[in-house]
Amino acid sequence: MDSKERDEIQFVKDLILRNKRPSSQTTNRKEVTVRCPYCGDSKTDRNHMHMYIEMMPPFKFYCHRCNVSGVLNTQTLRDLEIYDNNLSASIIQANKTIKKKTGSKFKIDKKDTKLNKVDSPFAQNATAYFNSRFNTIYTNDEIVDKFKAITNSAEFFNANHVNVPTNSGGYTLYDFNNSIGFLSSDGSHVIFRDLTGRQPKRYYNFNLYHEESSTSNKLYNIKSGIDIMKDEITLVITEGIFDIIGVYETFYKDKEIDNDYIFAAAAGKGYNAVISHYIRMGFLNLKVIIYSDADVKERFFRNLKDSSLYLKNNKLTIYYNTLEKDFGVSKDRIKLRRVII
Image (cartoon, rainbow, N blue to C red; front, side, top):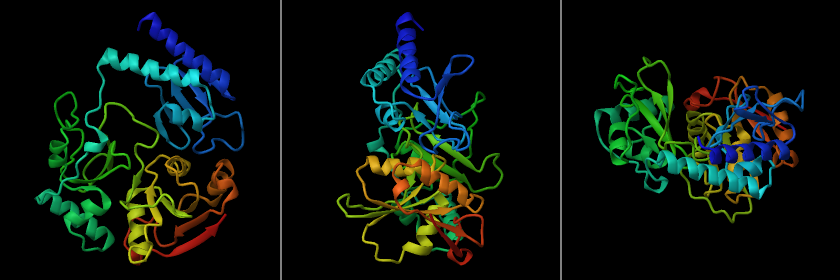
């Protein structure tokens, strides 16, 4: 790293520490800590900070409380309530410098992400798993179209010119062929789910890019056409992808909802991150409904409401499934309990 790069990084660090309160450096001076704007951070101590920002381009951040992650850009600085044009310009310049030096570039462009429909034993297996989970009769083409599913990973990787990640021995890190995947809202990630029960991890988040693209990169939504000019849009949120599909299949599939609903899964990003994502898209009047995992206490949602600038003055409806731990199941295994905050 040359002196110019060190100066750029130091400038970014100094501006964050000066503009954000509370904030501090870690002992090794390689990260800056701040309070997370997405989960609201600690409620018992307003000086506790769980979001760590790497002081190295592209300035990745991670919250140890809600697991939200991404990289700093103009929008994330606004989420942090840091309004400093010099800081935004410095981050952009530092990222340009590192990209020029390393030759870093995207593997594929978001607009070119192709969801292919290929009939194969792998696709049939993935479709059969999907239908058995929700007691449905979708075809492979239908779950690809409606739910942005990847049922044949080899063909998907080939169509999008993506190299499959391998370890130092050349072996793939995950059995993608025997998995079902779902494309994230912005097309930057695929969230794969193992179908064999034999892999060390059930889920694998596959980044289609060399680096994180934004704070919303792993959010997922069921495909729908939404009129941004509607007086009110209902935003239905769950934690996991299978949960939002289960909710849609059980409560909304057969209703005349006229594209007034967004069905989204946080996928580890935090509920506030989902809400902020759609507000930034221009949906200013959102009715928020959350279908929660059973182990998330009501207290969590009261704190969420108190910490959210949008939710603070709006009603929040929470549903729990009293028959199972979540909603990623067929409708006969769901019974609702409602909480209004």
